[in-house]
Image (cartoon, rainbow, N blue to C red):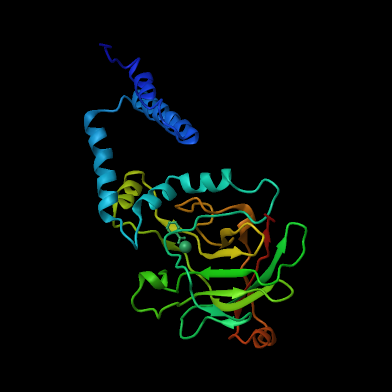
Length: 285
Ligand code: BEZ
Ligand code: FE
């Protein structure tokens, strides 16, 4: 019988999974075991610390369900989600990806180019527009723009029973010029949920939970790779310290205040208003 020690237990565990049929699963799990073991050795993890970690995972499972995934929020706040996005982003260019977040809902209402999403919403009027193009600059007609954002109270419609269904979210097909446009209210910065284990962790780390204001987009078109991303207000006070590390330089742009009433009239919004212009570039499959 082999005597297991700090020096040989890692190899023993890796040997135990040698029969894993799927080559990629074997590669990933072998590396995970190596890294976890070396982490435990590096910090000389105590029994109490191990129990704290197990409690964290248990509590994360307990608070998660169909409408909340604290595991994803853990990954987001530790920068893992963004690292995966960065590693898997297209090296040939195209719009950079950013975190999906937990508030996306599939199948939100379809509207026409130029739609008004403001309705009864409070907040600062904002006109958002742009073009969906190929990497070569050709406009893509009938690309699907799927948008979701916070209301002025910092909550998404599916977090807030006071907001009507589909509030400040929609889908829209680009026109023959690849163009999309909608009027909405300026999204605000908001805190990720802190009433679960992630809140305890952020507190322990002396971090805040704020995200800079952003619009979420999922853009898809036949024959092209989808992009899930966010468009940030570069002037937001949290732009350099997003709690989930979603900001990329190419995604932080001006939300420009326009004070000419004639411009507001042209877009059919109250004056003054904000203007956001952002083009998406999709990679061909
Ligand atoms: C969001 O932007 O909706 C979000 C992303 C990651 C974690 C929490 C919220
Ligand atoms: Fe968000």
